[in-house]
Amino acid sequence: MNPGGNYTKSTNEMKGYKVHYKNSNFSGKRIELDGKYFNHCRFKDCIIVLEKGDTDIAGSSFENCKLLLKGN
Image (cartoon, rainbow, N blue to C red; front, side, top):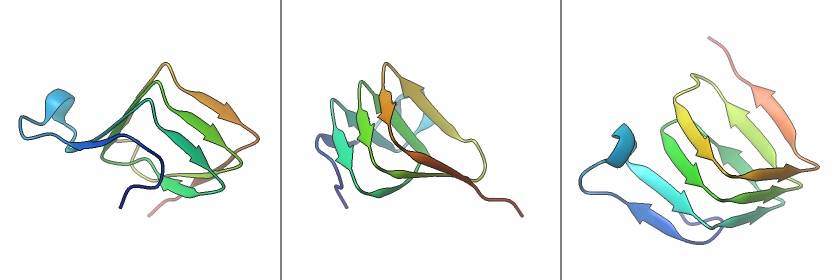
């Protein structure tokens, strides 16, 4: 699934994450962060879902997003 833009599934699993997004734009989506790496992405009007905290976000921006923290 490619909800935003540039999606890469890394064969060498750079930084330990299997799914990488770079320079992607997400708008009006529900985005689950766990297990993913986001580099210079833009999130607008999104629901950002985080459960385990296993994510990496660099140089990205969030505009009018809601954070949903899931627990056990």
